[in-house]
Image (cartoon, rainbow, N blue to C red):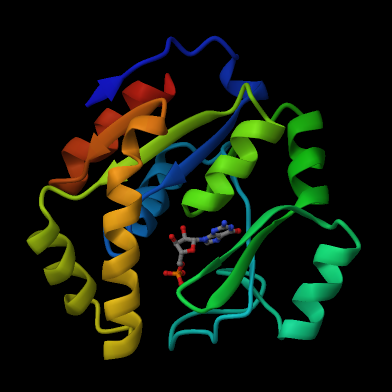
Length: 192
Ligand code: 5GP
């Protein structure tokens, strides 16, 4: 773990982003973090990706078609957005502003380009990168979850190199070896 910056913004006013390659285990970490700290508010993103078997519209994502997503960009309804692995992903602006105004800690799980946009629009955001113990382990995990086609896995692994090479840009880097350790490290770096 490499915490570079003291957390100056109180947790109740803080926007935190979590970024890391596909398959690194962000989803599991976040699910467990929210169980322990239910006052943290996790943004639900919009995406043009098709839902996976277990995913629900409005809970995991807002699943939109390209027209609908484009309309949200034009109407400036997204705080940030990016293309990832052939699909579009973005953070609805209004709910984030609402939660921050209500002094609820906000968590965004977003890819690299989105994290960069948030860095410039919210310079006081706290940005965490979740890294795999090794690239081989990442490939093993992404295949083991059996949610992606071979084409999607190849794209995601290619992008993973770019993301892992960018980790120096982040305020803190956490290597996700096992859930229990990572969870307590995450709590520490978030000041929870
Ligand atoms: P997945 O298809 O595996 O659910 O997500 C693919 C990638 O998109 C992940 O790295 C995830 O963090 C990222 N992502 C999810 N929601 C958003 C979003 O609202 N904005 C951006 N920029 N990336 C997102």
